[in-house]
Image (tube, rainbow, N blue to C red; front, side, top):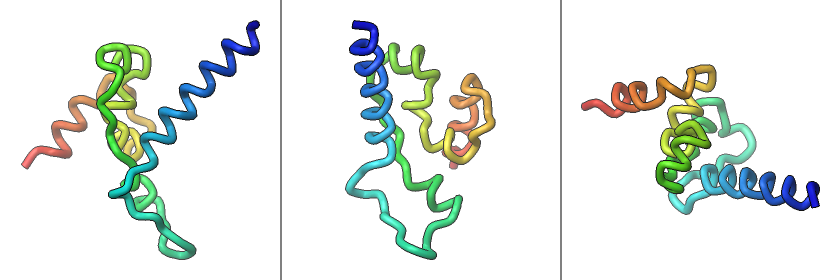
Amino acid sequence: RAQCSTTLLFDRFIMITYLHHTDMELPHYRNGQWNFQRGAAATVDRNFLGWQGRFFLHDVAHFHVIHHFFPMMPFCEYTAAFRLVTRS
């Protein structure tokens, strides 16, 4: 019973990770084309799960691209960083 609930929780994280790194618009790099910057940019923000996603996933779903470019940044700074990066 405990293994079943752990597996279901783990499956959710795998699904969320898959959704952030898979999209028809994202390029697929082969062999020597890939580097850190291209890999970090090859992700998408998915605004799903509403407030639960913001609270339980610490905004990593809503600001996943920021998370990739600044992996050591505390999650509480994602909103401000997003505003600075997307400011025109």
